Length: 194
Image (cartoon, rainbow, N blue to C red; front, side, top):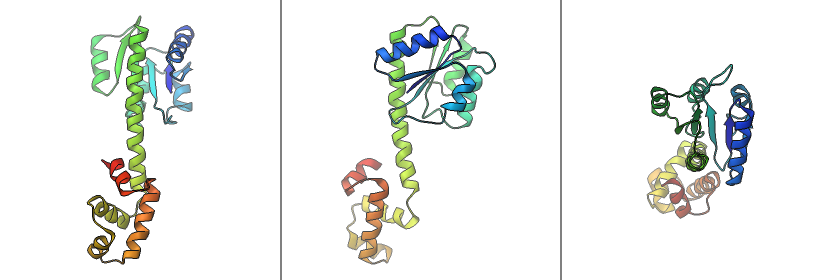
């Protein structure tokens, strides 16, 4: 989902239209606070990107970016700044702090949407990695030990011997690992964790 935060209705609406013409799901937010309150922490599995105007009344784009950084959301929500009043130091600072890109108005709409597609792909990758990490975090300490030995290519009997547990216990742990990691085979598990 492409989120567009800009206080200019015409620009916001035209960017939503441009994104949709490229097959990108998009929604506009008239204010930064509305975006932060309603959408900032809800992620789309297809990826998210934020087009963020720098100068807006009440809460400007840089302040929003600071809040997203503080919440740890910028890896999953790449930010592309839009501004009609930018300067080189502002752009450089934003990019150094993790912004995905910085566009000055007027901008080339196709070039902007190309960058949005790249940001969405990056967001999807970050989302997939976060999902795998969450699944790993759901494993017990013993399941992690069994997982490590499975990934090392050890058979159930060897795992049981190394951990001093029964082969049946290893089979139960293995089944729980596969269930929690949402895989059916050790090969699939190894591919997920590579």
